[in-house]
Length: 391
Image 1: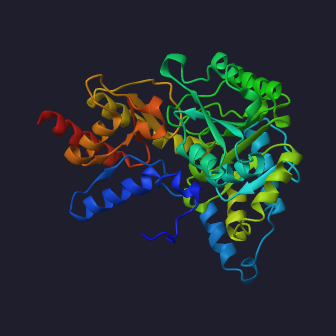
Image 2 (image 1 turned 180 degrees about the vertical axis):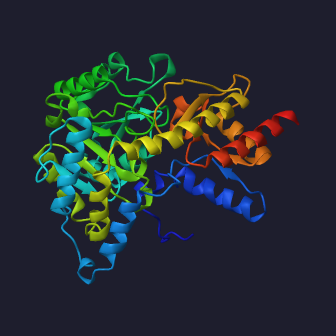
């Protein structure tokens, strides 16, 4: 290129295309060649939402008056449903008018929170391993990333002694996520209380990403159950996993009215709200009872048993107390890396699993298996891996 060549903004050069975006292109290419890859990679629920949710969407979409722009803050009945859901399942009281903001999925919320709180150069605490979007969005916001280690030796919990040694006066925001993705580590009240105390003492906003609390988990928890947490914390939640509504892009965040207002300032300048029939269908989803979650979890429990057999066939060890949509396992010491093992399984067994390195350096000796495939396909994957091992 010549000296006047157009180049992207620095922020674009600091991030990479999302791993799954790239890898799924390769999987599609292999499938086009007849490979018939079984995907156990992504955590996108494969089953539909409740029939009442779908029928509400269809009925409301057929009404001529439901296709206009909607309020940036979402429908009042949607916010009331979200508040009622938090009260019913978490025992957390939220003012639907001032303490809730609907989101087009919680992934969007990561960007809005980052833009609302981080100036260029501000510090942000990101877990290693953790959801890659925390780091990529922090780079887009031109923040300074401080990773904090989560290790198997420390039960995938923050090391608070190590956190205290960081330049905390530079740090404005901390991302946490329990039940943790990718490790499946469940939340507990002692951890939540300590994180809230840490945030208050150092004036660091705690952003808790909480989409997995209902999956294979008989005790859903919220960071906002901690007394006074709303003063310093933001919690994001989502219907993607709990209600099989990943493609519907329906999420929310909850916090104090001041934080909500700051985030709304960002969000209202980026999007124009959500489709009214989707919001009304979400209301129906939030009203579902325990039998819905029991049915969802019965399916995942059966699949989880197969996932454990897959891990064992690969020589991986795992913690049976994991929660969420995945199974996380440590690879054998003789394997070079998580990436090389995942590629071997892809090319030799025609099964796509996720290498742990994409979640951070502390994930490199681990792989992740998704439960978002039919039990039949998971059993086929197990057979293929056993055949690979016997060659």
